[in-house]
Image (cartoon, rainbow, N blue to C red; front, side):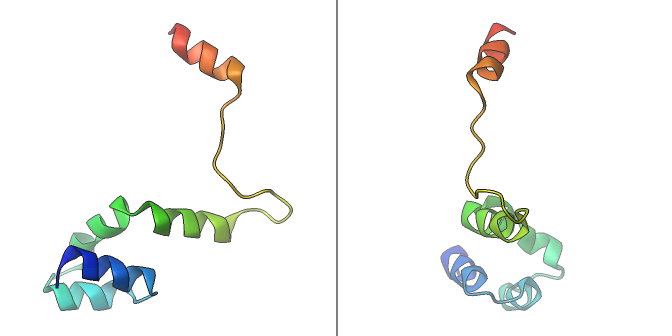
Length: 72
């Protein structure tokens, strides 16, 4: 199974333990690199855990924070 197939399975909701077995990994920790690198899965998880009433989306730092960080 190629990396792109494993990613497609993750996006389809297949459990990582099943993908680990298909890839021949002894543990799911080896398969975690697929999750670590996939921003779409991370964003979907963050959307599901957002507090109710909040606006979903990426954080944008205020200009004052950016100016402070640039001055470091």
